[in-house]
Length: 317
Image (cartoon, rainbow, N blue to C red; front, top):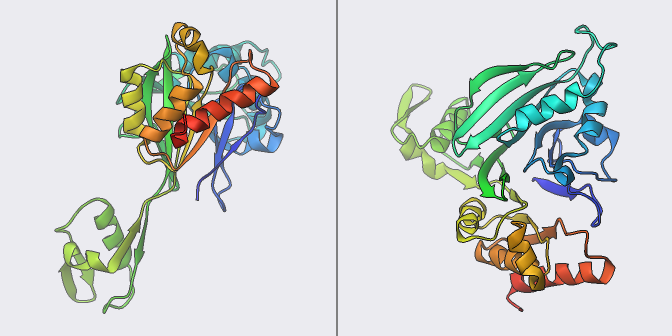
């Protein structure tokens, strides 16, 4: 099952790690300063998901890159329009005279979300760090592999801010059937996931319609974790969040301001704790984790912000 762990303390910049048991690689959401992020975390990151490049969400990329330099593998970076140039400028800020093309250096694939369904892909390699266009990314997801799929929405925060949904791949299991086990079971599962009702499945010397065999399968949806950062609490943004996060298992959402400071929230295109909690209730999130608070709040006030969010979530306003 997918698990999430905050790598920042409450008064630090946001950084959330997504991982799975028995899976070596992990995934990071944003990379602001986070004191709990370890060297091992950096080296084991397969993909980085940047909501936007305001300093509190992107300043720690240098540390991440520093520890990834010798890993000799690709790391994917996903983010809003401009992320490719942001990453390149970070890399070009240093002198790479001692790094040669023979070194086992990290290389990055950058996926720049320009609009919903419009993702431009680049590659960037040591030591020149020049952007190489790879064209458009096809498909619904900004990232997917054998264990996870990542959907997204573009929110308005005066600049684009990307909300991400991590979904563990669904599981399809074979129950009792009158047929002997074999390679046909894998074919049947694929047909089920792709809605190929009329596909013929070969079992020994028989060819049977997949639809006839589907009742022997059981389906379970994968665990889902949403990461929703800075956004104006407008109707348009809230509808996008609803569409992405409906019935999510865990929702990590900004609770930047107290609701009494909502004028400042609207001015700065942030949500309030109360509005984020109410939205989490509306999307029927199973668990809510308010995160990413204004530094204006300390200790008791910060506890009040969190309480305000949770009260709105459970309907005890």
